[in-house]
Length: 463
Ligand code: PA5
Image (tube, rainbow, N blue to C red):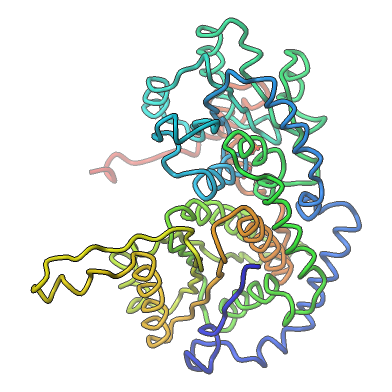
């Protein structure tokens, strides 16, 4: 089971000016209990689908049955954005192989190559189209709402390419979307595309354990049952427990207290393996979109939010760490550590007789990673900078499933402590409306007009 080591969050290690005291957590217990109750109430109302996904493994059999019908597929291309793309990319890097696409066929085996179309970028689109072999590619069009402009723009271009390069374009397209609503569901029905559902009560950024993540995971040789098992063990272990027995709630409570008592609103997630770096990206969206809110649930203006930052050890020791150590006291750092890397490499004898180099000979790369991480914890501690660790026993499906559910529950609890709705994202809608207006989508004419009036700049302010 993953562990949460919060020693260096505590005042007894980093001092009372920056650290949290046990009594601070004890005093927050009534709010934590209210958070537990709110989760219970919302779950009972069927609003929290993300907590049910680990127990909904039957979808895996449907995905496997479908996979067996496309033996020609050696590449999957995901078209989606935000919650419909970040989780799948994180799964690929953590559990398949960062360099999966470059592996020789003999090493890649039956695992498919994977490409991701998750941005609006003509240059990137052109580069990807140059290297992809469309006749052996399955395109996963993922959009919970079906109405996302970026996804639909990429789908439009790729659909055209698929039609040009295949005999039966319909065989090359799988959709993942709301079970009933939205234009993607409608065209999936009309075209007869294979389709998997994203349950209506699961929001985009909480959807990685639904078909959003599981379809691609199956094509990448990831053990999806292991993912779900890991996630379910976190729900079973922590759900409903009081704050001292509930690691996701405790970590939410720490972040809340660091904000309101210690003025620390920057939240760094720093894995010590590149394989988990995209998890920091996934988490950045989860945390930012869920917790950055103007109004609380009573409609009072609160403007809360913690700014998530992704960092990577050891690389960021040579980049961001100087700032973390000597810059403003405004950050809370969480390391993602692996107990086992599943492999190790010994350094060979290295320039014997040269003191500056020979000490490396015979040392292990895995140990060096551990020493560097521990040294970073210590220097941060000595500088009074709060830092904690989430420790994964190994980088395998169960641990990653646990990590996903841990961070999702933590984010939900944090939203409850701030008394906001962590599941909506009202502010980003306005920008979407202006874009629709500019694209002359019927019904959005007013937004084009508003845009033209509002988007005013002085040439004299542009040098
Ligand atoms: O968390 C969310 O709901 C969003 O970030 C969505 O994932 C993102 O906007 C993409 O939406 P959709 O899946 O509807 O295309």
